[in-house]
Length: 439
Image: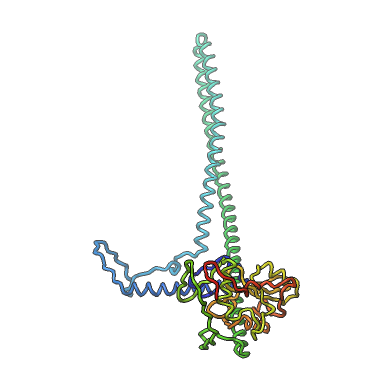
């Protein structure tokens, strides 16, 4: 089952729901290792293909000439090696100073426009009043022109001279006001520039420091978690493998140990079977474990493939084991285990896939471990130790915990309810639809 999952790089949601947290972590690590291996194989294959292929060079009028150094090699300039190069902090300070100057300049320009509008409004009203006064004087002069021409000329010249003096005075005052306004704007701009620079510098320093602290904390936590999972997996595998080999209860270990698998009892051949409907011919090699199977299909699988191996029986095959249960759901298994103490367990036939589930009661929760029943052996998904029967698997974990972190040790089997057994339909032979009953 694990080999098929790594081949397809896919696991169905029903199968994933049957896995415990430890098995999910182990499966994730295996799938990640398989992805890395495939990527390395692909890169090696591409490099080999690129080495064999010779691409013809296209004739082109364009050419590139590289600047050569004193050693006749291509001259390369690395930013930061030259004494005149600025550091990262200096570059950031220059950028912040430039931004502060631009923003202060924009604010100063807005203040300058505002002051200009106030000055124009103020002095334009003064000029309008002066023109009105001149017009009135001109009217009066026209009225008395006939009487005193000479006095009118003198008064007109005096008024013109007075008006000129007033205009000169107004211009001086306007220039003085403009100078003061410009100095105030320049002073405000410089002050605002410094404030903006300090604010941006503080924000950048706080952001960089916080980002660095967060990245460092996350990196340390992820590294610690990966090391803990890897160490725990190695310790579990080493301890269980050594214990199993010493006690002689393991039927077959992985091919890396060089052991030969013991011969299994031959699967009985069906007799006088007549197929009336189309059947699926499975491919040679690893058989895919079906998910979302119907109850009838699971019963037929158990009777045809598991019953010949005496699955569910005690080790001496005298009777059905007390810990074995039929096709029951996870909730039904938890209801049965809730009546006992921590350490109670049972092995049930999964209602979703072709396999078994080892349900275990902890102090505060229930755990469910998927048992892979493919390839003619039994092992917990993610583990490396294979057993020839369910009884050997249960007997082994009665002395050794399933995981080092959880310490799940099988102490007491959970039996059937007094009302009746739940595995009766598994051991009752029934004719399948589309088949002739076995004679």
